[in-house]
Image (cartoon, rainbow, N blue to C red; front, side):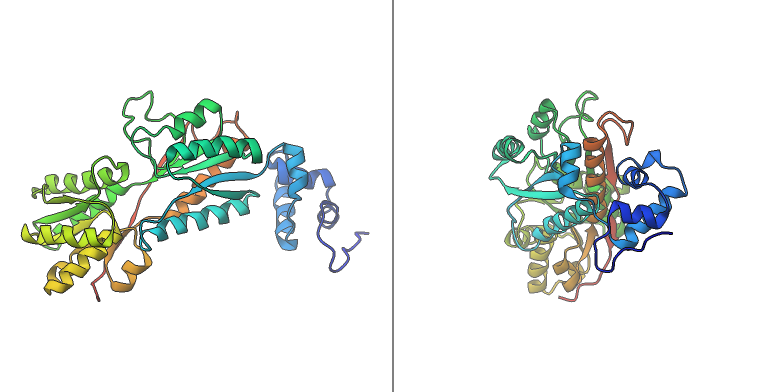
Length: 346
């Protein structure tokens, strides 16, 4: 006879084993080495684990695996309250997915990349972090070099910009959003609606993601036979977007694509002041932030949640099965974007 678990007592490996009529070791294998357990036993045990809300002891797991179950993530300063929401979405999604697979994020601050690398060394020594999640990759990024040389697992959100030769362009795991394809498609959409002089507001040269988005716009313009030099580069921000829009209006553009929603909102404010409803409705941002949605700006939506989940899953795979065949060695993935076409209500 199976003995029922006492009401109010927390679920244990023994109680789950009793309910599912398997051994305690089988339940442990389902949790820690599921490939060793055949179907349908594995699914039956997993269903019971979900039903009772069982969570393995973190302390016991750390002793057994000699891992801290901690992943490091650098919190960056927000340029403004608009595009800062993208970083917040990423952090939330990473934290949620890490928790689902038994890990936690340790968030730290660093003033620049050198300070971030110093933090890696300190955190590994004091907290024994299992791996790191990198963001905002850039040309000549030394963070990935240092982590790779130290043999520390990591996954980057962003490509290894500037490493075009076969030996270095795929030398570590990364996941990124296909921003160039996003601006390419946005430009083509505006052209399909009749625009012929499509301006672009971008970041200063040297930004990997920014240059990629500009390349996408220019590629579409060239293939459509449109002028591809109606470009203003500036730092990110509302005021910069307004000033850049003023330059493009003087160049007689009939549509504008922006590298960020922050710049697009500045452009919108300038266009609204001029009464240029035609351009306001042919303005496209990037990131699909809540503010852009509120005022009705069309935008390129980054699937941040999907990227975050894939980053966590890949990093945990590297930590827990470093020598196993898995998702490539190293893995790289470009995730497609989604376009949100709107009519401005600002």
